[in-house]
Amino acid sequence: MSILLVTEQLDGKWHRMSFEALAAAQAAATGLDCPLVAAVVGSGVGQLAAELASKRVSEVVAVDSPELAQYTPDGFASALRQAVEQVKPRLVLFPHTYQVRDLVPKLAASLGGCFVSDIVAMRFDGGAPIFVRQLFQGKLHADVSATGEPPHFVSVQSGAYRADAVAEGPAPAPIRDLAVSLDASVIRTQAEPPYQDAKDAVDLGSAQIIVSVGRGIQDPDNIPQAEALAEALGGELAASRPICDNGWLPLERQIGSSGQTVAPNLYLALGISGAIQHVVGMKGAKTIVAINKDAGAPIFEIADYGIVADLFDVVPKLIEALEDPN
Amino acid sequence: MNIFVCVKQVMARDSVIRLDEGATWVRDDGLTFEMNEPDTYALEEALRLKEKHGGEVVAVTAGPARSASTLREALAKGADRGIHIEDDRFVEADTHATASALAAAIGQEQHDLILTGLQSDDSGFGQTGVILAEKLGLPHATIIMEIDASGSQLRCKRELEAGWFQTVTLPQPALLTIQSGINKVRYATLMGIKRARKKPFQRYTTDELGIEITAQQNVRRLYQPQQAKQTVFLEGGSREVADELLNKLRFEARVI
Ligand SMILES: Cc1cc2nc3c(=O)[nH]c(=O)nc-3n(C[C@H](O)[C@H](O)[C@H](O)COP(=O)(O)OP(=O)(O)OC[C@H]3O[C@@H](n4cnc5c(N)ncnc54)[C@H](O)[C@@H]3O)c2cc1C
Ligand SMILES: Nc1ncnc2c1ncn2[C@@H]1O[C@H](COP(=O)(O)O)[C@@H](O)[C@H]1O
Image (cartoon, rainbow over all chains, first blue to last red; front, side, top):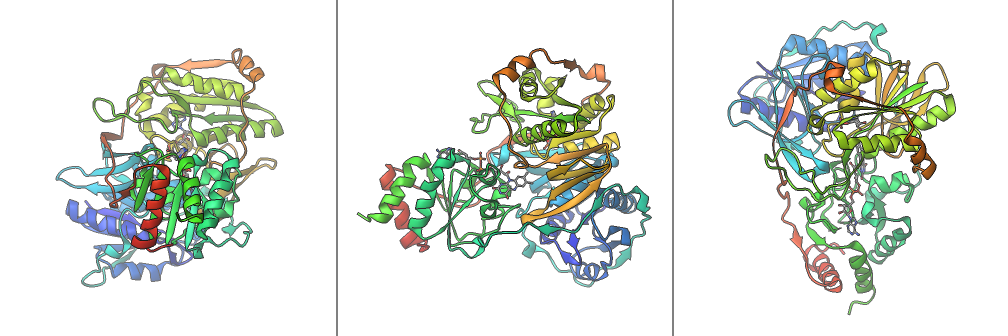
């Protein structure tokens, strides 16, 4: 039995997490000693299929149909159900994208299989694979096993596997056009093209120093303290999602999967727990400093310097020390 | 409009986590519990839709006896009725089991719209709503930031990655999973809390709903994650750590 990797693309461009998931799928194929089939889904995906075929995979399948030009849960679930039924894999891997969140629970449930979502690692010590997931917003990890009938569906968290670890193939893999029949009438949702909300001119992408506040700031009245620190460091102020949800800072200062991705020299996280959706937006920072009163906060897993303390004790002293070096 | 909102009780954020004996879940004793945060936004959205279009808001939970307090909170905020599928096993249940239970309870009633949060803060599956939709044969849309229910079809603003959005249109009945920040949630008033005591509250056992709790995925072991980086922890008085940090940033990391 094989492993099926389902990649993601939009308008002929890869989703960057597709190759992270491919790296995971190659690792799984080695761990379980079975062939790897990689799928591209969409409309007019021939070129992407050819690119995928240069990687170390046993076969590439192209699930190509005009009905798949625009993502809809009904259309994609129907197409992938047919693909899974033809390929008959034991394991189906996906990158954990927003589209996968929308699609795979439905796909898996319709086939009666389980979906182990958002995994950060896999182990294959003989027998059934063990998947590692984050629980409690990343505070704990869990070893999870799938018990139901295969195929088992698994999605891979952003950053868990490295795209540059993908192995090239010795020779181009065969490409098969996988015929699926799609009736437009099964598609109940109408999707319009993606758009961006009009943004102010805050481009945190070019900031060298970012002071970022999370829910630990506790009250909008405390934001000026963080702002003063940002100013003293000559940096920009940013925030985690709950701060922007509450309207304490504008949305364009949000860092994370639904906000901006930044890679400054210095990222100073004040009262941010370090949930993955935040971390994907800032883990590329050269130096990460975390100030958090909970020593078990996941942000410390990626911090270069950590201070386990009340931010309201430390922040004023940092400002003081910057303004008066003695 | 008959709106069902699925709310889950989770442990309060900033809880101190201790593993249970088998290390497959955390110890319950001494913890406080609250409504899963995205679900508070889903509930608020349901209440607003009802205020606009009329109808009824029913809050549904699957959980142990203690989760009744989360349903009471929903009633105090303005939900009209509560449905509690009571079983201790829902604490550690997988999405297949939970969605089956919710589908059994909601499926036997007239429903126009079902709202869930997009993800639970404890298990973090991010699946229950979509599976529930599939089990009930409904169309769904996830990570919703705006709902317009004034036409014959629902028009919704879906959040995509990295600040992108998309409008989707779907027929009713439908299921939507709600993203945090879609609205500003209300607090329960004293009057609301008083009124909640008289509101209908239906309790089911899994037997009464004719469902079994079977798992498709099992947690074998919970543990502390390993450090990805070698973090240097700075300790001492506040001014001391402040000076030390600035030193490190100037002379070791050379970033300021
Ligand atoms: C689909 C999806 C997309 C998302 N997109 C994003 C996104 O783009 N960006 C984002 O940030 N999040 C996003 N999230 C939310 C994310 O999962 C977390 O909920 C969020 O990042 C948590 O923010 P936080 O760390 O500020 O709050 P919390 O998790 O509540 O953490 C607060 C921290 O502050 C600490 N603290 C409290 N008081 C103090 C004090 N006095 N001194 C020091 N420390 C203190 C606590 O110990 C805790 O660690 C998304 C979630 C989903 C499901
Ligand atoms: N036990 C439960 N009772 C009621 N609703 C639930 C339960 N578990 C999950 N949900 C709903 O499903 C959403 C997603 O949860 P999850 O799939 O666990 O991430 C939550 O935000 C809730 O709205």
